[in-house]
Length: 271
Ligand SMILES: [Fe+2]
Ligand SMILES: [Fe+2]
Image 1 (cartoon, protein in one colour):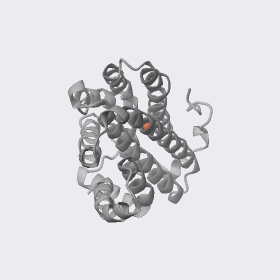
Image 2 (cartoon, protein in one colour; image 1 turned 90 degrees about the vertical axis):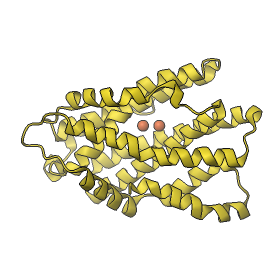
Image 3 (cartoon, protein in one colour; image 1 turned 120 degrees about the vertical axis):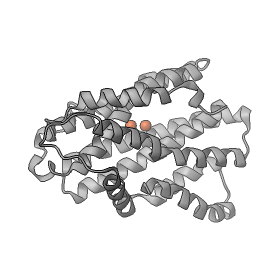
């Protein structure tokens, strides 16, 4: 059960639209995030299939995780509809699906159940820190509704991370993966976070016809602004801690490996 309701708990009517409606970077960012979140449905089906022999996992994925992720997408979509009512969300989303769906297949999963849980932890690290960044950005824009919305999503993402962590530990009791193997998956998954999803999201926005009142920005401009934003607001300490946690390192190792993780987490700066 989701802990909040996107219709009842967010006061979209209180948004000061004039203040942000010309922030087209924000429109891109929220639209891409909403596409990815809403599509969690497809991803859950595949994940459920992968873990089908574990009813507890399947139940959590379907009853909690998926519903919460989809709610994130719906909340962001509703926000967009209030600020940019002329944005053809559905049309752009349909294009997104065409491009994205072929990438969501079971072959994309990690080779073992513990490794897939680990990869999901990295994805949730990415989303947790991304919404934390968005929350700080909304604060800098003096937009309390977006700040509230991002905060709610951020809290859900951290909670998802904890669940995947719990199941990772469960599977790893039998798989007993070494640190090297865990480290490899973490780094690989970190590298995947921004590139494909954002590119496809951007592409689908730009392959949709718009009304002239909307201004689209170039991919370079989107990357530049994302970079600026993350450089300023990205919660590094939190990102590093969440990334390193599954490695279960002692203090000496932790100090040694922090610079490596720090530069890996830097991919989240959207260079
Ligand atoms: Fe989400
Ligand atoms: Fe999540």
